[in-house]
Length: 130
Image (cartoon, rainbow, N blue to C red; front, side):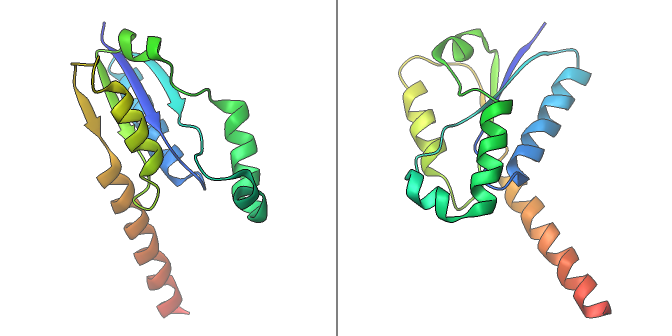
Protein backbone atom coordinates (compact mmCIF):
# COMPACT_ATOMS: atom_id res chain seq x y z
CA UNK A 1 0.00 0.00 0.00
CA UNK A 2 1.02 3.59 -0.65
CA UNK A 3 0.91 6.08 2.23
CA UNK A 4 -0.23 9.53 1.10
CA UNK A 5 0.04 12.62 3.27
CA UNK A 6 -2.01 15.59 2.07
CA UNK A 7 -0.84 18.83 3.70
CA UNK A 8 -2.75 22.02 2.99
CA UNK A 9 -3.26 25.56 4.15
CA UNK A 10 -6.63 27.21 3.65
CA UNK A 11 -8.25 30.37 4.97
CA UNK A 12 -11.67 30.30 3.37
CA UNK A 13 -12.09 26.61 2.60
CA UNK A 14 -11.36 26.64 -1.15
CA UNK A 15 -7.94 24.98 -0.86
CA UNK A 16 -9.43 22.63 1.74
CA UNK A 17 -11.82 21.39 -0.98
CA UNK A 18 -8.90 20.73 -3.31
CA UNK A 19 -6.98 18.88 -0.59
CA UNK A 20 -10.04 16.81 0.24
CA UNK A 21 -10.50 15.91 -3.42
CA UNK A 22 -6.85 14.81 -3.59
CA UNK A 23 -7.45 12.70 -0.49
CA UNK A 24 -10.53 11.10 -2.00
CA UNK A 25 -8.51 10.25 -5.10
CA UNK A 26 -5.83 8.64 -2.96
CA UNK A 27 -8.43 6.56 -1.12
CA UNK A 28 -10.04 5.52 -4.41
CA UNK A 29 -6.59 4.33 -5.50
CA UNK A 30 -6.44 2.18 -2.37
CA UNK A 31 -3.82 4.35 -0.67
CA UNK A 32 -3.63 5.04 3.04
CA UNK A 33 -4.32 8.70 3.77
CA UNK A 34 -3.52 11.35 6.33
CA UNK A 35 -5.03 14.81 5.76
CA UNK A 36 -3.36 17.66 7.67
CA UNK A 37 -3.89 21.44 7.79
CA UNK A 38 -1.02 23.81 8.46
CA UNK A 39 -1.39 26.22 11.36
CA UNK A 40 -1.93 29.90 10.63
CA UNK A 41 1.07 32.19 10.90
CA UNK A 42 -1.14 35.29 10.93
CA UNK A 43 -1.69 37.13 14.18
CA UNK A 44 -4.81 36.20 16.13
CA UNK A 45 -5.98 39.83 16.04
CA UNK A 46 -5.92 39.87 12.23
CA UNK A 47 -7.91 36.64 12.08
CA UNK A 48 -10.44 37.90 14.64
CA UNK A 49 -11.12 41.03 12.56
CA UNK A 50 -12.35 38.85 9.67
CA UNK A 51 -15.49 37.03 10.84
CA UNK A 52 -15.57 34.61 7.89
CA UNK A 53 -11.91 33.67 8.30
CA UNK A 54 -12.39 33.19 12.06
CA UNK A 55 -15.44 30.97 11.57
CA UNK A 56 -13.72 28.84 8.94
CA UNK A 57 -10.59 28.59 11.08
CA UNK A 58 -12.57 27.49 14.12
CA UNK A 59 -14.25 24.74 12.08
CA UNK A 60 -11.02 23.56 10.45
CA UNK A 61 -9.23 23.49 13.81
CA UNK A 62 -11.86 21.00 14.97
CA UNK A 63 -11.63 18.93 11.76
CA UNK A 64 -7.85 18.71 11.24
CA UNK A 65 -4.60 18.49 13.11
CA UNK A 66 -1.32 20.02 11.98
CA UNK A 67 1.22 17.78 10.26
CA UNK A 68 3.71 16.10 12.55
CA UNK A 69 7.19 14.82 11.83
CA UNK A 70 5.93 11.26 12.16
CA UNK A 71 3.42 11.92 9.34
CA UNK A 72 6.25 12.75 6.92
CA UNK A 73 8.20 9.68 8.05
CA UNK A 74 5.12 7.54 7.41
CA UNK A 75 4.36 8.99 3.96
CA UNK A 76 5.55 7.60 0.64
CA UNK A 77 4.42 10.82 -1.03
CA UNK A 78 3.28 14.21 0.22
CA UNK A 79 0.70 16.25 -1.69
CA UNK A 80 0.74 19.94 -0.78
CA UNK A 81 -1.73 22.74 -1.46
CA UNK A 82 -1.95 26.38 -0.46
CA UNK A 83 -3.53 29.46 -1.99
CA UNK A 84 -1.25 31.66 -4.07
CA UNK A 85 -1.63 34.56 -1.63
CA UNK A 86 -0.68 32.54 1.46
CA UNK A 87 2.57 30.76 0.78
CA UNK A 88 4.35 31.52 4.07
CA UNK A 89 2.72 28.62 5.91
CA UNK A 90 3.63 26.12 3.19
CA UNK A 91 7.14 27.51 2.74
CA UNK A 92 7.83 27.12 6.44
CA UNK A 93 6.54 23.51 6.37
CA UNK A 94 8.59 22.55 3.31
CA UNK A 95 11.73 24.04 4.85
CA UNK A 96 11.16 21.87 7.90
CA UNK A 97 11.29 18.80 5.64
CA UNK A 98 14.42 19.72 3.66
CA UNK A 99 16.94 17.92 5.83
CA UNK A 100 15.12 14.66 6.41
CA UNK A 101 12.49 13.96 3.74
CA UNK A 102 13.71 12.41 0.48
CA UNK A 103 10.50 11.12 -1.10
CA UNK A 104 8.23 12.89 -3.62
CA UNK A 105 6.50 16.13 -2.67
CA UNK A 106 3.83 17.00 -5.22
CA UNK A 107 2.48 20.57 -5.26
CA UNK A 108 -1.17 20.94 -6.13
CA UNK A 109 -1.03 24.71 -5.55
CA UNK A 110 -1.31 25.44 -9.24
CA UNK A 111 -4.58 23.55 -9.28
CA UNK A 112 -5.86 25.70 -6.39
CA UNK A 113 -5.07 28.83 -8.39
CA UNK A 114 -6.78 27.38 -11.44
CA UNK A 115 -9.82 26.49 -9.34
CA UNK A 116 -10.03 30.05 -8.00
CA UNK A 117 -9.65 31.52 -11.50
CA UNK A 118 -12.31 29.18 -12.85
CA UNK A 119 -14.67 30.13 -10.03
CA UNK A 120 -14.10 33.83 -10.70
CA UNK A 121 -14.67 33.37 -14.43
CA UNK A 122 -17.93 31.49 -13.76
CA UNK A 123 -19.15 34.26 -11.45
CA UNK A 124 -18.30 36.91 -14.04
CA UNK A 125 -20.14 34.96 -16.72
CA UNK A 126 -23.21 34.71 -14.49
CA UNK A 127 -23.10 38.48 -13.86
CA UNK A 128 -23.00 39.21 -17.61
CA UNK A 129 -26.15 37.12 -18.10
CA UNK A 130 -28.05 39.10 -15.49
